[in-house]
Amino acid sequence: MPEPIAFLGNLDAEEEADFLAALAHAMPEETVRPFRTLSEAERTGIRVAIVANPDPAEVALLPNLAWIQSLWAGVERLVRDLGDDGVPIVRLIDPELARTMAEAVLAWTYYLQRDMPAYRRQQEAATWRQIAYRPPGEVTVGLLGLGALGSAAADRLVQAGFRVAAWSRSPKQMPAAVAGFSGPEGLAGLLGVSDIVVCLLPLTGETRGLLEAGRLCAMKSGAGLINFGRGPIVATDALLAALDAGRLSHAVLDVFEVEPLPEDSPLWRHPGVTVLPHISGPTTPASAAAVVAGNLRAYRASGRIPAAVDVARGY
Image (cartoon, rainbow, N blue to C red):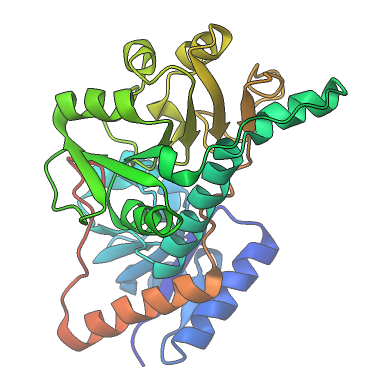
């Protein structure tokens, strides 16, 4: 029997139990133990830790870690807290997460394409008025980020009949149905042609504040914004100013600089904002456990650590 695997996370009891049960089912040959149940001697022998927003002080008490497996796709917090330790961090690359994120992108793109925010305002004012329909083929959706999540979202949007464009930091091979943009000039170009901009970027030093006042003003007049990436990518004050000026029509926000979103945030009550409680791409215990099990079996068989996060890039 190999050494135990440590489980560390800032989860409530029910969430922790769900993940532990899923991991036990996916890899019955392994023993996964919550950190608090490990003796000091057992902690010394731990080579692998599975984590979900762990306490860095607890991670530091595992002196012989070979690598850390995250249960989340986003790893900016882990990189910030643990990146200097030199222990490889493996992010979760889960096809089910990509599917659910693509589902959310399509759902909220429809929400904006079909003018649901305007109909909500009309209901509040008891106004009966039909808004001219825009078919998907007349709506350009611009995706910021074309990793696993962005690629899945692009496929769903193309299948639904939308015109799709995508931006990445460096040039990438794009599907035939997707218009590709890259670099600073490409970002301006995508923002200028997109009726709906969807942010799926990770948070890095380069993406923090990427959508600031100048770039928000560069967006197509009346465009909508969906941010499913990370909150600090969008400058909140600049976004509110663009909405108040009528430059942008609506913003769907699922991620924020501070979460949960503080009760006194103006985003809660702004008529041009839809606030979501970070639900666009939930991690499913069963599918996440299957991915983790595959990584661990490959590691046990070969001794090779799975592809890890580039700490300098932040993802």
